[in-house]
Length: 166
Image 1 (cartoon, rainbow, N blue to C red):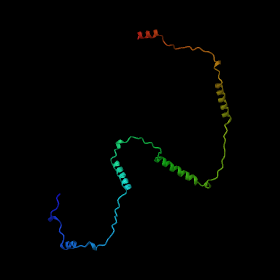
Image 2: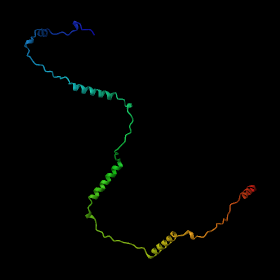
Image 3: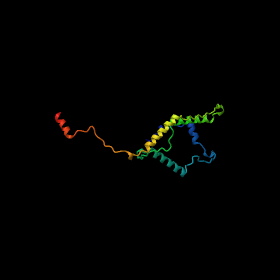
Image 4: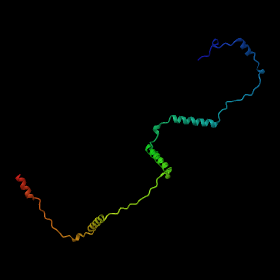
């Protein structure tokens, strides 16, 4: 890029040019300049640098460097079935608490204790005697008996004879 030539520079009007050349700086009032754009302190610069480094670390983070961890749930939230059961229980409890016992009718309780008849008692006694007979049975009083086989198995020779005959 080269510097512009004289003919390319903007033209200033002659009356404005003469005013600018004849301007007297002594006529101006003195004013104190107050700098309104205060430079940041060293603490502000440090905090901003930490923040920018943090943002840079987040942007360049690689999730493949993480180690796998198993999540263990310690608080298990109720499912829809549990919530419905809780609502039902609450409505039942509120119904029980607000129940008016004055609206109940008075009733008389009659106890009926049906005793068994004499035949049932005799049958039960017979069962008890049978049970005591079984419980008190003494196998030593039994006599020894020999078992006689009426259908003996054939011998090896009889089986061989049948095979030859067949």
